[in-house]
Structures are given as C-alpha cells and as structure tokens.
Image 1: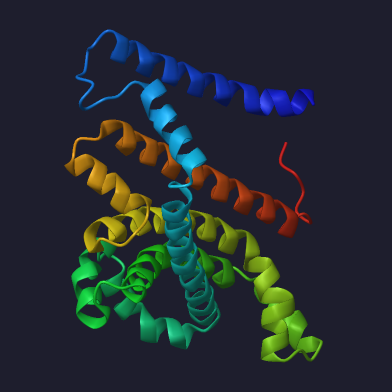
Image 2: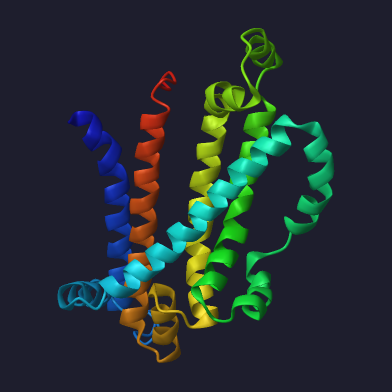
Length: 254
C-alpha cells in the first residue's frame, strides 16, 4: 500500500496544484472567462453530461475510431517490420518507398482519403492507421533486426521452419520493442481520431470540441479536452498493464 501511495500521490498532488492554479487565474480574471472557464465550470459541465448520458455516445465513437485505426496500424506495422527486419532483400525493396511516405504528415493524407472514401469511417480508419503505423513499424524493424544471429543458427540446428522460428523465437525476442512502438502509436491514433473528426465532421469528442470552440462555449470545450486526456490516460495505462503481463519474464528494473 505504501508503494502504491508513493507512486500515485506525487502526480496526483501535482495535478491538483495545476487545477488550483487554473482556478486562481480565473478568480483573478487574468484571462477572460469567455476563453478560459474556471475548472469548476469545466468539471461541472463534464459531470452534467455524464449524468444525462450525452457524453457517452461521442466518447464511444472516438474510442472506437481510435482503437480500430491503431489495431490496423499495429497489424500492418508488425507484419512489415518482421519482413523488413528479418529479410535484407525485402528491406532493400521497400526502404525507398517507406522513406518517401514516412515524412508525410498524416493530416495531409485526409484530402486524398476523402477522394477515395468520402467523409466516412473508412476514411478516418485509413488516416489514423497511416499516421500511427510508423512508431510500430520502426520499433518492429529494430526489434526483429536485432534478433541474434546465434538464435537463427540454433533454430536451423533444431530444424525449425521459418514460421516456427518467427513464432517461437523472433516475435518473443522483438516483443519489448513492438509493445513500445504500439504504445507510441496509440497516442498518435488518439490525436488523429480527433483531427479526422474535426476535419470531416464525424461524430465524436473531437467534433464536439470543434463545435464548442466555434460557438465560444468554453466550458464544453474544456470538458471535452479533459475527457480526451482522461481517455488517453486510461487506455495507455491499460496497455501498460498488458505489457507488464506479456513481458513478465523480463527482470524488473531497480
């Protein structure tokens, strides 16, 4: 229990201190309440919407959009990362194309995606997957590329097939890097889910924040931002717990 308190209490006190500072700025009218509502107003708006049920539909829409794009990016990133990291010929074939696509900002792909799929969920899934694939892909290439040559030699001595080597040796060896890339990709997917909702007027928290900003409903705007932050914290923490369980064989850091 003491260890849990030591881990949770300092960041909690820091967050409460920031909220107190925010409240003080609003009380002193250093910023107009039209643009910066007091935290009591923002959290009150969030609580009201949670009680009347108007919060959950856009929250679920944003979460579903984010998770779908991240899942597609993770599948494609790990598959491509394995092919590139373990096969020099595939690396030589794909590397020029990847170096061309990687610097492109994901938001720049929105008009292209709209041309193919219109203002649809398919468009959002493509943009989110395109933007969040790169952390997963780069980490997977690094992880699979660092599979020790000795492990490959041992697999050949044991008569393992290519698929058995991939499943029993390469993937477990690269898993720490893969999971690190997936956590980074998850943060990117949340950002892009909000961006696509704003750009394409898709229902979700991002679109509601955009509408609140356009109509100067600052309390609703900040309530949406708080909810987006909480969503990111919860999902990242869940993935971190899953990572600890999957990698429980690793020695704990001091």
